[in-house]
Amino acid sequence: MIYLCHLFTVVGLVVFQTAVVCHLGFMGGIYDLLLPYIVCTGLFRPLHEGLVIAFLGGFLMDSLSGGPMGLYATVYFWLLLGVRWLIGFLHRGNLGLIFAALSAGVVMQNVIFICMGILLPARGASGVITLRTVGMQLLWAVLSGPVLMAVFYHIHRLCQLWLERRRGDKDAYEVH
Amino acid sequence: MLMIVGVIVLIIVNIIILWITARRYSLHGSGGVAITLIAPFQKAVGGSIHFIRGLWGHYFFLATVAQENERLRQALDQAVLRNNQFREIELSNRRLREFLNFQKTMSLRVIAAEVIGRDPSPYFKTAVIDKGSAEGLQIGMPVVIPKGVVGQVIEVSAHFSKVLLIIDRNSAVDALVQRTRARGIVKGASTNRCTFEYVLRKHEIHIGDPVISSGLDGVYPKGLRVGEVSEVVKRSSGIFQEVAMTPFVDFEKLEEVLIVLTAFDRWHQGVR
Image 1 (spheres, one colour):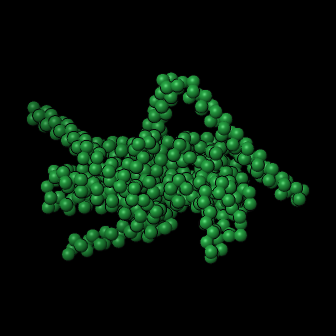
Image 2: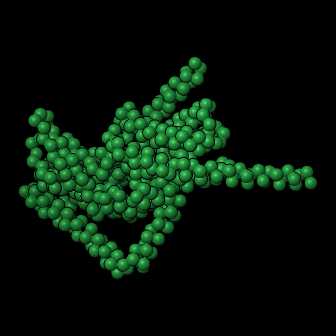
Image 3: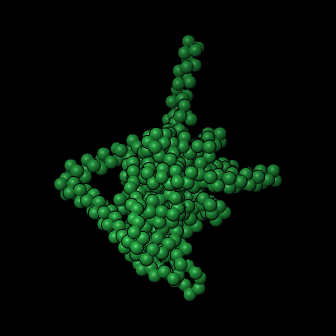
């Protein structure tokens, strides 16, 4: 059930980014919306769920993008590992951690894309990137990231509660 | 220590995987699977947006003006295309009159498709369209609109395809300046501009000169409008000049495209 919830959310975010954002002019410079989802999963969900989301989301994004297969999956995988490493010594509900992780995710994605362009010119991204693009993405991340993460967190919580309630009903039925 | 070694190994494995996948466009058709899964949702969402937009544009907001504008825009597109065709024919006539043997260079069989998705990354420029192998599309087919060249098909699933736009850094179009016939390669710059490379210094090129496809790359038929020269830099040394080109197509507003079937068939039969 929780994986179904992840699947719907990931597909919804991918569709939103590829089919809706291009129609909304004011959202032109927005960052990758799967980043807050990865950060949220890294902070509040078990590692195995995070890994499934990182590779599923990465696969879908890589398939729809013109970049080499595995580029998005790379970003999500290392972001997830980074977040998991950070919560080893920081409190996971810390707002500063959320901002830092999300901003680091946005910067890391841009850096990896540019590095791939330099290392693998055959299919790499353009090395020409303005600070404006990264700045715009960071601004969007700071403004909308925590809100999105709160939404994701509550979606996970609702799914978890629903699952537990169902389990409880099932147990009660079996005892009965 | 063990963790550091593990991370280093993971990074190396990661780079190797990316290096391998960067050398080919699809990994055992896995990209097509994802497109097949996601594209129907994109189509449904895109359709809903078009419907709402159309409802607003046509019925609630300046109904007659919007319709008139749409009609005039279509008429203008047609006129631009015809004007370019006439210009090309005029130039061809002048050139080929000396050879007495004129052959009509192009008669295109095309199929229309709707753009239903865009590349999620600002670094790559691709689009997903709602036609696939079931409609006869194949990898390598050129994609155009009346205003000019859009790109080429790089991945095909049953009912959806991925198009590499000419503004992507990995795209290249063999082209020539319509007025002077100076030849070069139009390459994407991942912005909304392209570079027109390998143009010899000896050719006189002016800002505003139209650039058309040469037909020599085996992908795009000859004479299709690509863009116009927007900047020319002649350095004191070197055999080529630096030329920037602005595509005729507005990729931000790309909604419908035409996939050229005939030229592709003809070319590949010729190659065989």
